[in-house]
Length: 197
Image (cartoon, rainbow, N blue to C red):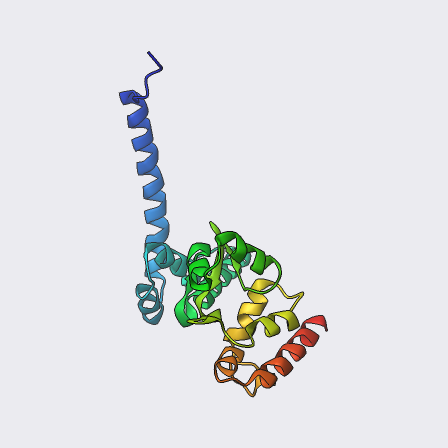
């Protein structure tokens, strides 16, 4: 007979006390944070997609004494999440493979070769859905990725999803969708030059 996997009542009580103490500290912190929020910030936080992002946004917006570095990191995480949610969200490697009619390994190989945009998430790579069409890849997308070679995935994501002065203050993604490949190529070339300066 193997060792018992049950927990003694004393261990359960200690864990429960630890959990209660932790919950009390977290509750006290968030009580102060929520009381200090402006009404418009509370309304922004209430629109968060789930509990995790409610906490993240509260930490980001609350006027609680935290280090500036923590605030910057939280705002960065929120900005990244917003980018990932734009224009259809993201796909898992399996979903991207199904869309392209290839294996998961082929998706990873295409990403590594700079032919697909994938950003590293907590559980592996995520693939922005907007780079795909019903027929495969968005026309001109791979050429644009080649022009942006050397940029990190988050910079590339930002390039496609934010208005760019070199693209007439339009999003390069929208220009690709309307077939204006030359304008996107010029914007990508200038984007790379700006990053090098």
